[in-house]
Image (cartoon, rainbow, N blue to C red; front, top):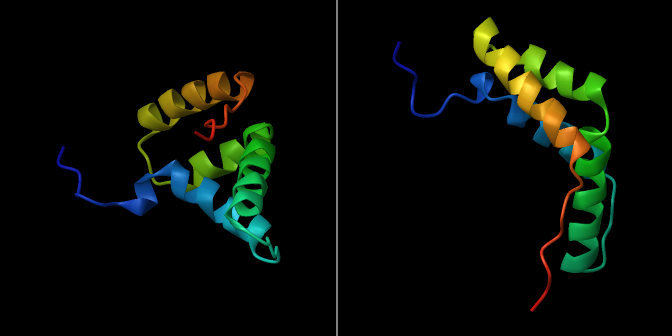
Length: 88
């Protein structure tokens, strides 16, 4: 089966970014560092919510096999903490 070069409707990450943008919409960080801190906190909240992650997978139009595979990988990702890059 041929997949298009860019197909956001097939990408569950689009749902994650949509949730993060909604969460950050009313923020007013004073600098890039605060923005990054807000973004990391938002993504962490999404990662810790299996219901939100399942919703992102369900809203994508992935075939069932791919959706199940991604769900399993996302479940593993919930268990790992996000590591921020150190500032050099």
